[in-house]
Length: 249
Ligand code: OAD
Image 1 (tube, rainbow, N blue to C red):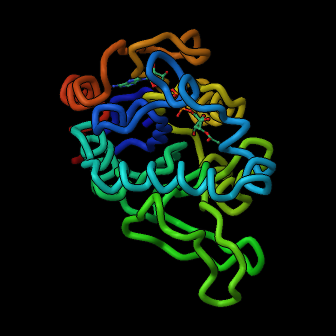
Image 2 (cartoon, rainbow, N blue to C red):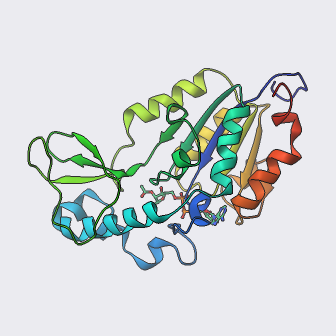
């Protein structure tokens, strides 16, 4: 499609961050009321912090797990799933460790959790992964059912590499061709790879649109910036841009 009005469905990349889950009651990291205002990332979200005090780190992650399990997907999560249904080719890259995109209806095979998943525990020794449904912040330190070693939360901490296979999935999607539409929603875009993927996916002719109440490093590159909460702006974006979503639907 690439900017023309042909009767074909679009190829779409969506990138999301904590802001898309804000209206589901999950706190963001940066900005007023954000987690990194109240908590020290260096004491809670690094491999060194876990080695030093695994009980403190687990307590914090288990409280956040409980919050994720109580939360429900909002209109923006559901709108992303609607975009997947209307796209010719689609990938969602989320920095969020919650499972609200899955519960909002996005297919797991079209979803990359680039910072891991909070509802997964991974063995520090044999790397076996276990998925949990809910958690008790005051429970004993969790141990691996296979080898008995300490489990850790299945998220990416500061100072760690991104999961190789997930990066490869993003790269495969980018190599398969340019996108007609790149939507970047609810992220400060603080990491270089977010900017890089958004820019490369849009290429020279794709539409780069940002949904975020605040300006970000991506704003100068965006063809459209919607300065509103995602649950309001994204469903309206779909309605108001039939050139992407109604042709060939
Ligand atoms: P941030 O907390 O950095 O940014 C949240 C963004 O969402 C901000 O730009 C807000 O302006 C915006 N926002 C707030 N409410 C919104 C709403 N209702 N609708 C749309 N946007 C809204 O979160 P991320 O950019 O996701 O990493 O943070 C990236 C990574 O930094 C996280 O994955 C985490 C964190 O440290 C790790 O833990 C490795």
